[in-house]
Length: 420
Image (cartoon, rainbow, N blue to C red; front, side):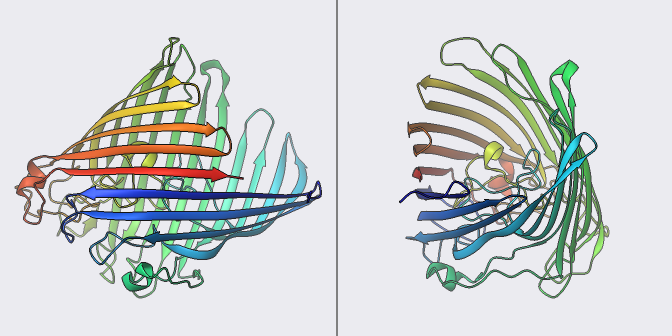
């Protein structure tokens, strides 16, 4: 049955099997496996000047048990992910403005601080107001005030059973963003300026009142050209170092630098070098929290797989990476990367693992991560097959910290995604 021209219906079905050999997290033991399943259905109606959007998500798991690293990043069954109205408000100066009201998902800039999750099984969503202004030349301004969705249920037993409950949002957790882009044609680059605010209160929280201004300068990869990216954000305000703890001064910093070259050769290879820094808490008892908070950002695209792995986070991190991407066949991509992992502060935790030596005597070298990924678009636009592997080789910190795990950790996955 044909659909009317003003109505569209799209969907995604994805299945990913993950296996983890030797757990790196302090609170868990042994190996792990999970079958992560994600399905979504997106409906859009163009009733100019209004567009109506609704999206349903079902993210669930099989095979996980009481020893699995299972949380709401894997399970969120039968949820209304998006439900919003968007108005075309007409021209303003040289640009056009739009207003969106309701529940939405958002990709913003580099996606390091605000993202619609791609690899992760569940997806961040927000309810509120979103205004944007854009020109044909690429200038834009965007302003958002949102209530982040808090996925429910969140207890381990319910997640193991794939139980359903409506997600929460309330005024105890508010998030706002200002974002502007400025094209720089002489250097074929783009400058982005932004500021985020996170305001969290109530019991069972870290009472975060965070302000995160920053910038990003980026030139995207092109064949035969050098590309680069520089992004930095300062984080100020107050937060607690633990749930229900007392709020203290928060001062943190994030920095990303990268450069790459895409050769005009068979297989279109691109070699890239990157460095990431996210501050950690320098002194546990000095009345300041210096651990950077990545807010609602994604990390798979530069730090390796998440899911039941997720060994590297954008917090208390000092990490260089060497990466090679190439296309060995039509519709096929291969990537291999080597990343060294150090703590920015030896007295703060390796946050992804919950491993810490508050004395700092275990040093800062967490270890090395080697990652490879193969992606094949079997039917471009409809069917993708992907597999990957990542391994952590422990360093001095992992081997010496009181609750560290000295063994190698190996993670592998195989997934298939169907779009319709």
